[in-house]
Length: 119
Image (cartoon, rainbow, N blue to C red):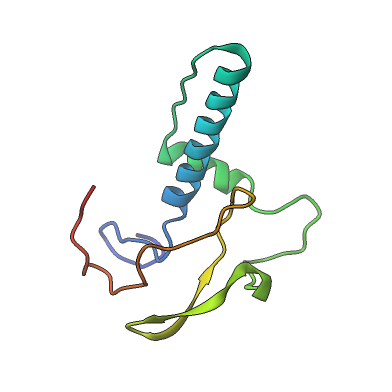
């Protein structure tokens, strides 16, 4: 709300909390599966968007870093271009990956709100 100077909640341009919490959830699942294989034990994880926000705010930059923002680098991009409603686009690499597995997107970029919700 403060960022957009609005009196009501406003969506952010990047859903950092959703993405970061999703990566934490995936890491918890993989850790739980590893624990199951090694020890035969089950596992449980509790995650929240609010806790992820707190973690992101507490750890803004690496110690001693002079970085003051996010800088795009070519190495962060996937090697192919994509046709979107806005023209040619570039997808970023995933923050995490499994070696030997390709990063494939099921659908091209589209205008917000044009796809029906489905599970």
